[in-house]
Length: 285
Image (cartoon, rainbow, N blue to C red; front, top):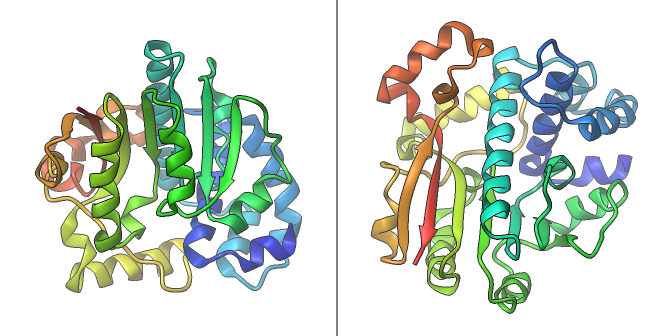
């Protein structure tokens, strides 16, 4: 596992931030999210990461993370879990695809299970994950890029509703690749859903993008060429990309008014803050 962790890309290493946020929050008072699997994984990983040359990984091994970041990631995971369970209740024969799953244990957290749940990420990530999780008839792990056609054709062959979840993924992808893929998903999977996190498009280019990169490196410790490339100007932007997309709603960390967000809850009253990084929900028709 040590070699695997060190060799994954800088972008993939951000999945460890999510993992540790789940673990730290699970061990906090009145946790927003309870993720026992994350706790077990970080207990096993921390002695390894403590010896890493990466400042980010060493900090994570010591539980060093912004409290606000920890709570925001936990709130996001809780919301995405709820949406997955609502989909399963309505479509027990449906498929949930967890795009760019990282080390997330969403399938294990779900109170009700779908007909099929797929964790999808790059091969090196899935290789590590398969050392921790066990596949079953209703739970599969696929090591492919989201742009690989093989897995997409497999899912299409089931001819059933699909919930595509992208938690903390799309902003790192380039629009010239992602937009055609999104259009294909909308047109190839009728009566399905897409639930994903996005950022304001203004943070994907120019000075604002450079400020994001500086924040990621200095405040969080992210290394390498990690940056934001894909974003939206409005929650309904995908309706312009394809007539097959129909916007349902959007969600922000501030919408829950959780007391752990403290004074920052007031920021949700203003669009300039609420729509910096948020989640959008679409159906396909």
